Length: 204
Image (tube, rainbow, N blue to C red; front, side, top):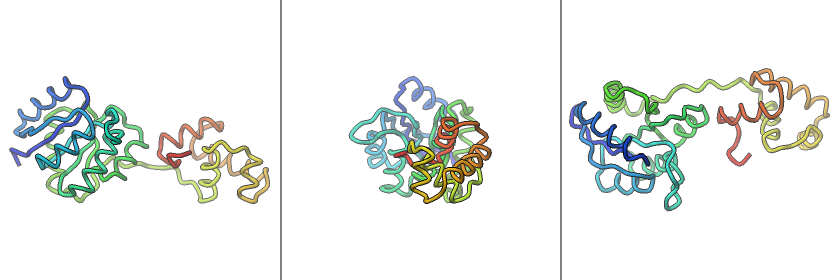
């Protein structure tokens, strides 16, 4: 599958140049480089590459906040293009967001070029498969998830009890279950852990 056409989107010129030459050495054709998500979308329409490599963290331009947002737009507007995220951030919440945006793959920027080339070829051979890292979430019950969401919104135990029509003591019991399953010891740690796992709504 040599000669595959690639678009690289990253806000660091030196990284783009390094990745470009590394991929070219592996037989890929880099057709364009973008410095932000909006450029990536526009260039994807113009060049119609086989693969778009998107950095997760890029500056907001024209309402496109980052690589995840750009991925969602490219996947919805140009569904035949394979989109792969490159990042130094491997938090499970980001992986979850990339999956929701339709990304085909998710790789560290530390990945060796020859390994990345092999992975891209594998993804292109079967783009319908889920190639993103598997995210294992704690097995919270529906009620525990309700308590966790309210906790993320800053509610006190009494407020949660009122919202859920439960006693404060029952809320405490649910919180202890949440702490145990998240492997934390207090409210703040529980919220931070849940956010890192992508378990809380973004507005919480």
